[in-house]
Image (cartoon, rainbow, N blue to C red; front, side):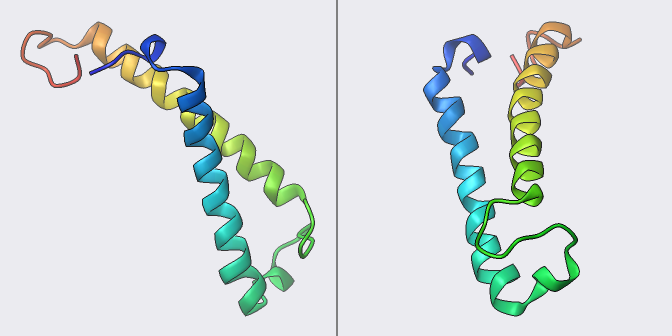
Length: 86
């Protein structure tokens, strides 16, 4: 398994961009099509809004936290020689 520092920044950016693209597709195919935007406060149809900012923040936190959790697991694994997280 590669460490966080071994993976290029471009890969982390591509993962985050893929998750954001999934959000945009969900927005267009579910929220806009079925009219769920009426029940979402501060949502703007077909415009950049607070929901997009929140999703971007959530994706960035999730991507960076996931890499930190993997690092901690590798470092403090009690079964270091047998653990799959090394």
